[in-house]
Image (tube, rainbow over all chains, first blue to last red):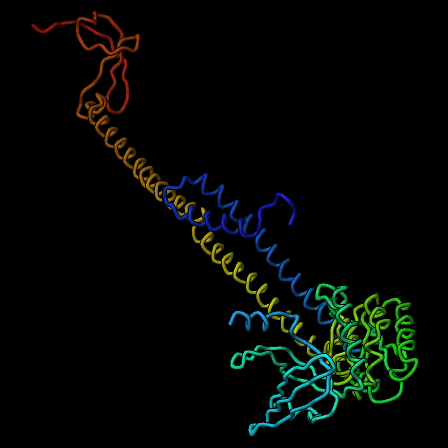
Amino acid sequence: MAEGEVTLDKALERLESIADKLEDPALDLDEAVRIYEEGLRLYAECAKRLDAADLRITQLADALAKQARERGAI
Amino acid sequence: MQLAERIQSDDAFKDLWVEGEVYQARISPAGHVYFTLRDNVGQLQCVLFATQAAQLPLTPRDGTKLLAHGYVELYLRDGRCQLRVDDLRPAGAGDAYLRLEALKRRLSQEGLFARERKRALPPAPRRVGVVTSPIGAVWRDIQNVVARRDARVELVLAPAQVQGVGAVESLIAALDGLAQLRDLDVVILARGGGAAEELWPFNDEALVRALARFPKPVCSGVGHETDTTLADLVADVRAPTPSAAAELCVPDAGATQVRADRAWRRIGARVRERVSERRRRLETARRLLDRRAPAVRIAVGRQRLDEVRRALDRAIGRAVPLRRSRAVSAQRRLAALSPLAVLGRGYAIVEGADGHVRASVAALASGDRVRLRMRDGRAGAIVEKVTPNG
């Protein structure tokens, strides 16, 4: 994660607070559109990061399994 | 009482070797042996309890010379000191044992056996040096143990003579040889069990110092579990036997691998759990976002707009016919009021030559040319005479 970038958890919290805000019927439509757009952007960002984390974990597990096989082969 | 505690807690009265001739030895019904050790300057009461007596090859008999090991305690009932004996050796070996004790004390004071000097064994050794006899069971046992525990570990044998004349020099030369090797992780100094005298080289000061300055950790496995040599004391780790030394130095690769794999799986499960927990939150937020999206608001707005539009359409739809009918009725009314309509009933309209209607005779004079507009046409006429009403 680049420095200065918000953490995944922070982004997730922001997304949840946007969902809460959108529930307010008194919310101005322009404001609703604005934060909805932000919410969609946050969703895409979070999903991307979670995918990256999953991939990294899988890669590490594979690397370890490969190492173990090579050790076993000696 | 304080004196007894003082004596029993003072190190100076523990771990003592006392040599003398046995006399007044007697065995109690319980099997305890009471005897006195004396020499040409004095004497000391000794007690050897039955449990210890059963483990010792020697029994104190009057007239024999013995070297007794134990600690001094104050025997309160009689108010005198006695030696609580836990080991006995023939007096002939006495000088050697006393020298050994002196050496041990000296080296200990020098700090050679200090706990702080002990180095930890490497957790995953790759090359292990072994100083022992190339012939005999010890070397073979070590090879077997290491092969079983971790086949990747390379053993480097530095063969040495482990007993007899020249053994000390041979052991030190073997150590020096190993010290030259790079990539050596640990050294095992091993020798099988034997008579106490056979272990003497391992009590030699030169060997102890060679072990102390050895650049890598040293694990000793000399003799049996009950034998403790100075080499054992100076070693970084003391194993009771050569096989045990091999086991201590070489971790079981299988077991280590199993543990590492288990830990890895646990870590993996935790990390995956963290990711999926966030994914669940994310999807929940996404669903809420969709459900509360402005699109819904927009749809609602659009619906209202449509309704207004329809209302407008309806309104405008009614507006035109209404006006149309109003126009028709107005036209009807207009038609009904038209002066021309009167003509149908037999009236005529008089217009002057200028085209204006002459509604009064006052506007006519004899001889005027006029036009008569009738229901179905016009007719020219000339006024003959004008007669106002009256």
